[in-house]
Length: 286
Image 1 (tube, rainbow, N blue to C red):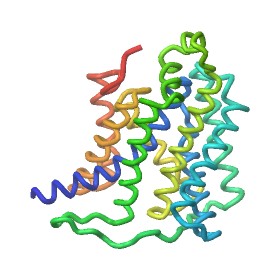
Image 2: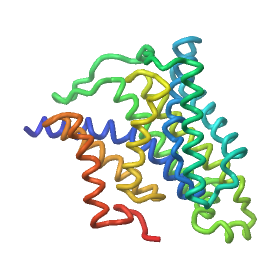
Image 3: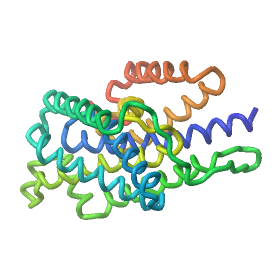
């Protein structure tokens, strides 16, 4: 029984790390720009399609393809922020409507270009690692290690890098930050680019494990939304806690019952937590 519980915990940790990568970008954009990015799942989809073209079609090394895919998605996101979203910063309702329109446009565009069918790409690593009876697929373990590295880099970026400190200052009070010489418009551009890059990175990493299609961003977007609600909208530590909590709960319920019930339980978890903590586990009431 103990071994089964450890196996569930490991499986939940693997999934939770992917959820965290998605949720970090989502909550970073909201925390700084006050925009709920409903197109976040479509940036995940763009990352998956980009790595499919680079790795599977052009034969570029997988790890290099993942980096290039994240950069491509970041650039696309920054162009969208500059042309379409800049004027909606701080206007949550209008921003939500605009990002919803962007999501529909990106999904429709990908469907026209690549078709609605599901596509698969080769896995860069295969096999299973057995650690004291705990089985971990090598491809998921690779994703987990990369996700941990990204989390550590992200923490040090926000904690010590000049740009990261400027982002934190704008998130707290953009007017005071502007008086200190920080240009909020540049921070908005950088924040949206990083948020999109994280979504694209998650899509590129998960593409070999699942199939690729214009519609694969819908479920990750839903998971990211659940995670940031659990942890607290705009709270980066909350996104980490919410991602791990959701991953472990889903892995446990899926093992003992099934995945459909696991999805239902994740929504029930949101309801229960919001009843007692309306701002989420680590969020602050506004």
